[in-house]
Amino acid sequence: MSGQDDSLHIDIPVQLDEVNVVFSVASLSFEGDMPAVLFHAGLVVDDAAEWNVEPHVIIVFHTNAGHAALDDRTYNVNRHIATGNPYKPIIVDLVQRGAQVEICGATAKAMGWGKADLIPGIKINRNAMARLTQLVQQGYVKISES
Image (tube, rainbow, N blue to C red; front, top):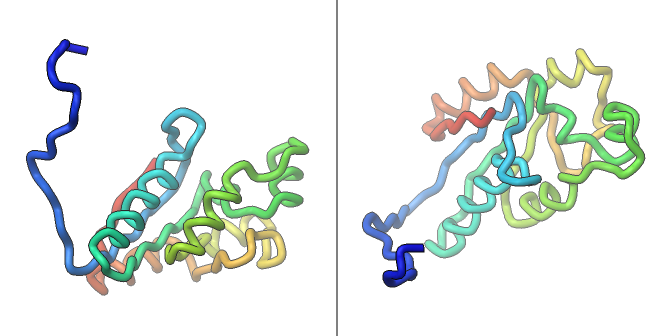
């Protein structure tokens, strides 16, 4: 530290009247052991709550990140471990706080995953590219996480 005042001063405050965000997640990148997308989506949901607006936050897992949407049993089989999906509690919390979590139907089909293999509440879309196109055309801001 520089020895100066350590308090954080926000130079550019942000206040939004609506929050329409879709996260495209083809692979997981991490902040420590936390997938960055889950941390970032949490920030957006928290901000929306502070601004008293409904969060329209959608996370679309596809390609190499599809495993993040799996229930414990299927995660264990696919990742060759026995500890369950470490991201499940965070995903469940985000869903409970208003985020929508989806998995690409093409990814699920390629991997042989069905609804019973997913964390309850996760939705299967047609495919990530069609869904992302749809949401962008509806005015969602697309944030790509990889």
